[in-house]
Length: 372
Ligand code: GMT
Image 1 (cartoon, rainbow, N blue to C red):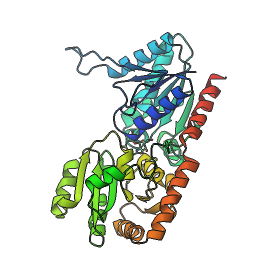
Image 2 (spheres, protein in one colour):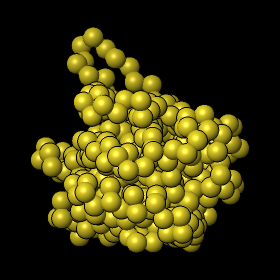
Image 3 (cartoon, rainbow, N blue to C red):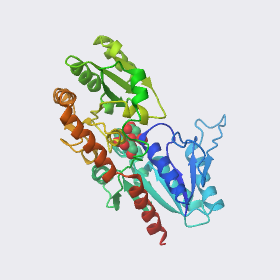
Image 4 (cartoon, rainbow, N blue to C red):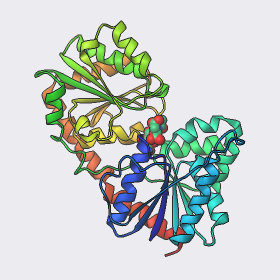
């Protein structure tokens, strides 16, 4: 098949999922066209059958904002015509599904639009009444819609009051890349012998509850020698640095900033902290589990569909840092329990979120919408 993919190519779970999906489809012999603002960060080295089409948005003195979304829609239509695309897969309703809708109107062929909802569009933008109707149009005019968790399907139905059929295709992981042991070198360069490692990876938005991450770490550190690795950057970054100074734990916290290659960092940890107040899936929890790293998280959104409470990690109500720190200590102080969680996490990731299984599901969906 000939498949177009549009996503946010910068760091973030949706970009990672869209890019890994595109690469996996190309390895199966499909022709994959990324229609994007930048080369996707997870693309890595050249992959046969993958093409990149970058949006070139002109800015004119008379226009207050460059017409980015129209340039995207026009490019989608152009690529659909030139390369005879069967499907455009839009990762996010806004702007990608809406641009796909416009592109299909413009294109000289019946290109099918498949939209995957990742969360932020539904949980944040749907609250904005001025955008709600246009997002609803993008969703309802798609030929098929998927969401990354059942929790997100429910939220989408409620937010948009739509009866559109939405199916769940969970995010996935390449368990050959995210695997135990690959973090040993990184660990020895960042951590002193005997120290335990707590990790948090995010875009430091408020919903990630960074103060809880730091609070849990500070409590754990009172009992066991430990170090906190913080990966990513975002609006709460400066406040996080201040909190670390206020708690007098500066020597034990590493702010590593944005990192492209997270597998070795994730595998270098003992526990992943994900106390979010909103999380449609929590790709980083799956990445950790694939590396055999148990997750301490909240019960928000789709997290309980990824992390099995009491088997691959421990989950608590949002904000319950007492329980989250007790659970972290429970794991770190009991080697037998830790080992069973670690093995359970890896097994669960392999059994339920394997990349090949999910690529099969997307492939079947594309064939169904195209009637082949
Ligand atoms: O978490 C974010 O703010 C980034 C956002 C993204 O676009 O990558 O993440 C969303 O999509 C990911 C991939 O499907 C999910 O794993 C995240 O849970 C989801 N984030 C939220 O729902 C807050």
